[in-house]
Image 1 (cartoon, helix red, strand yellow):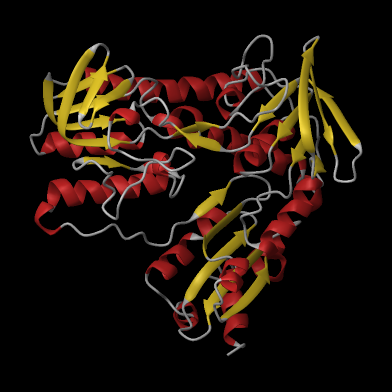
Image 2 (cartoon, helix red, strand yellow):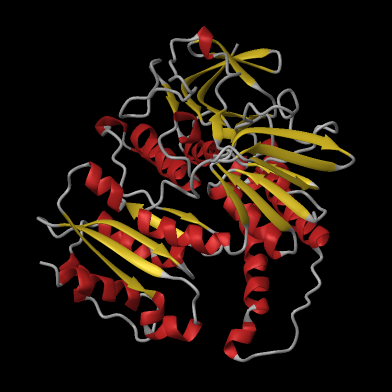
Length: 465
């Protein structure tokens, strides 16, 4: 049996361990059954943003008439060429990681599947390996719901060629009508891309769009999104049929009425499940919850000493930036400062949805604050009521700030509108530094720039004390 100092299972966020371990002279094995770079690089945040950016550019071009600029509305979209370019780019980046590992004398790269046969022994490609420290970073995959017609068929199956996010990001033909099941981040982002490039969209949403968002922004987003995407809310008893290259999606509406839509493509975006069901964890003392997420303690260690887990597979946060943070914590704790290991302490964890309109948030929503019994002050300011906002003639746009009434500290920040993910960063920093409403108003804001909307919301909040 080959022994290593470090074994990494998962080549997405898990790659963060490889170089630091090698730099310390440790022997390293990394195991990845698919392409290195994980979901983010190959089938997630990077290729989706490479499609969303040109979609946003096209949407802006189509709306130039609101500024008094005319000249044409018929744009030719080489959808196949765009998707192929994006796929080639991410494939090249992934292959570059594999080449650097395969060409190394100090890294053993196993392009295979890993399964535990005991607490600290893994079987990979017919051989067994063990390590002093083992890191499980196997991520997650799209959840396939138990919908008649889909059950028993993998995505892309010729008999039922529906798509998940994986297939939708590499689908080279633009459908005439795309049916979408799900109203979360992934469905909204990909629906925005396909719609902007020319496909009709029909959404089937169980309750509301992005329902975990702050209620004020969620309501604005839903109203705006529904002007572009026809939506069936409250549908249940869904069933799918596929014949003659057409999907028929049927269900029952909230009033008991039958709903049916036909389209030439179907995207299933109903959440994710962790990639833990085929790791052989039943042969170890490692435990999981009822959804398959691995239990870890405050040091990200599993029930087996020396075996750690992080990222999507532990179910705490499902972002690439969160698994990066967890990996950096483990590198510092175990490699750089092992004599003073502290429990992981998460700073405010932000998120963003890159659709139209864009939306980003950090900290508590107003409904969170109410449910926790927090005494709070809330203030909003609309984009159109600022100088830079007026210049952009936005159809929607708002900043919402939530402060603890007693401490005056910022405890939640939510932005809907252009550049919201970028705008949010000053508020992420403010929350991380436990800034108060007064701190936000000490700084000088460039005039005219979009962050003045943040300042104006803070001014409104301060008036409430």
